[in-house]
Length: 169
Image (cartoon, rainbow, N blue to C red; front, side, top):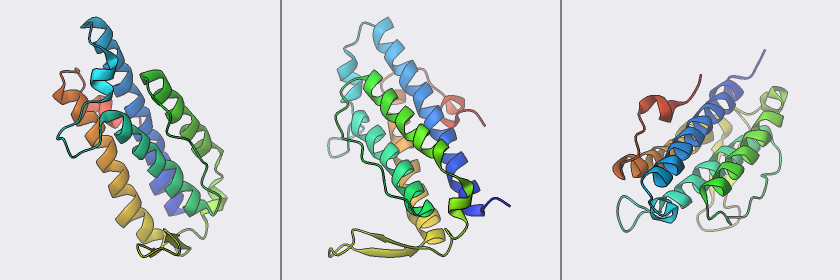
């Protein structure tokens, strides 16, 4: 039997990252069609104190890989934040999707009760059970950043809709 934590995490991360790939593809095509410098979209933000699109995608992919790795009890893969183009962001998402696909559902059997410690040894250290980590921390942060990436592009005139955001399921 597949772990409920696996079912509530890996397929969801994969679906939403797939949607993010579609949204980014449409944004790149929009920039080309409208003769907009792609960097104008990549650096766009909803408000000056928020991350730009590029960083929103990096953080969303970071949450997908780090939450999944911790729940599976494996080392979090390191991906440098060196992306500067839409193609770079697509490659980053592809790397995270490959990592997620390589996780075995059996690795999640004890995930609900596994202790997850973030920022170990620092004043901001937080301790969770795996279930709390996924549902109260990981998924909300992941959805915030994927939604914000979508909203930045929609706000900037990219013709995307809810079906694009949600992806294939």
